[in-house]
Length: 158
Image 1 (cartoon, rainbow, N blue to C red):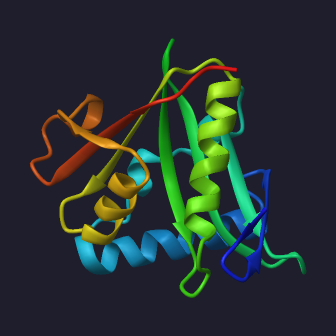
Image 2 (image 1 turned 60 degrees about the vertical axis):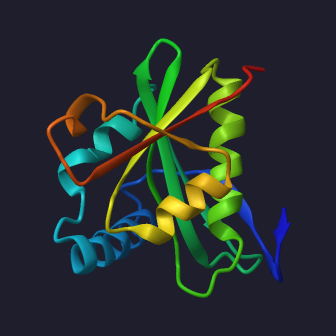
């Protein structure tokens, strides 16, 4: 899969692997800087090492980790997207990760994708809207968080 000038492969991997942990730690540090919360309390590695979730790493043709993303079982027809991240300068990688998550969630039988980001994360909000996600009411753990922005997108199961 090629986006911009970077050739990318995206595969399911263990989030507890060295590269998985490095990417998750980078994302948490970045989120902490501009929102005050790295989001670790809402991502439990064990959930993504089970049949309930899938964690992916995007890599360059040389095997360098460029980004990550995950989804997990929210309800019988809904998967929640989590921890979507691409390293700075990895143009097109976030979109490639998002597309892979959508395809694999649909292949797993999900019809709806949901996600949350913080209101301060304007870049992420624009990214999700550009990629077909629409705002929804806060759900689940985010219902009591006034700075949570939640989105959904319908997908066709395969």
